Length: 147
Image (cartoon, rainbow, N blue to C red; front, side):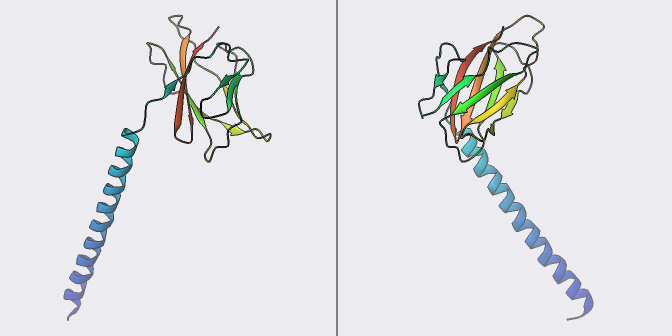
């Protein structure tokens, strides 16, 4: 085998390896995409005053440290939940796109989780939001009214 044939053989092997890697990545993407699409819709909870706490069906309590308000950051606390991954909460305004408002909760050192949240002001005067809490694949949706 001369040098020219070796060169073409190496190029051919590299193209086969790159093709296999590409097929593997596409397969991984498609499998994960279908798993996300099959995700169950969030369970809607109806809680009274969130500053007093809201019991989650899977265990644990979600509460706000103070009444939520525009322009003033408020703290969201999650207790009684042992999560494998950091929980997150996403806020969306009812009937209006207010952009990307997702917060990852951090451990508070006392066995709970917390996030400091600041939501954008709605120029049309809307106050009704939905908070979607995600904890280890379980999702809970709570209505939230800002002052």
